[in-house]
Length: 329
Ligand code: NAX
Image (cartoon, rainbow, N blue to C red; front, side, top):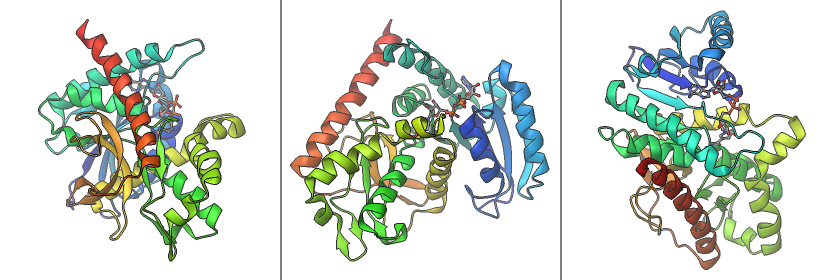
């Protein structure tokens, strides 16, 4: 790990997830406790004042690893020499907005940011997209950054993974630390598929718990997939700290390695395996080795899982087709 600062660009820095993420990035939770960080905060012009407030608080944290904070509404300045991009800012779905409108508005943002990353970011740039629709936004950014290896554009499904881990721990009365090998497949949406068939739950297998199909189908899967909505209903605001935590876990493991004998979940451009068409940014079981994600290959996918993976992949394909049709116009 280098002692020169890593340039970390955070878009949507004044938003809820940005606010929850920045302090932990500055404290070393993402890149390790020996890696200095230079923060670049990208926001919309109307939110720059609020971003300055966040920066004042970051300063007041007196974080030894935080070497600088730059605030801008100019993507070129924000991504210049960036080693890491946390793409959190996105256009939210407003009342009456159709999903197609949301896809269009965001594909525009992420196409531009991808092109700027291609132009000015550091050669080793690693990107995680959090802003929704996260998988398709990552695919759009990657398509607009032809000089950056596509595998460096990823999307957040670690939050879904962590939610699945926590729900399985609660159901089985097993500590989270004793559960491994959960997989989240597909899209970060209600169609995602949290798969416990390969999991280890203490000294038992996840497949054993999956035999209770009523619990699996009517409780576990929908609870994980719809957790975001449940949080909005309870809190009156969407997941922020847990989403920031997922993004930090994702980058941490990507750079510093995932635990041995386990795997995690991340959305990556598909190389065309597990029946997922090439180029879709799909969540897979992954391990991080030497700073690269590797999809865990060779897992036996039963019919129950196959149907659910296929349904989520079909949704991803429809999203990508919708934004591709826009760019062809
Ligand atoms: P907020 O509305 O609190 O913050 C978003 C911020 O992004 C705002 O400050 C806004 O000014 C800024 N922004 C918008 N467009 C921008 C652009 N083009 N450049 C720079 N900044 C821009 O939302 P927050 O709760 O922080 O959520 C951010 C995104 O994360 C949303 O799209 C949300 O749907 C998504 N989520 C993704 C999750 C995942 O697991 N992948 C889970 C949590 C969250 O729902």
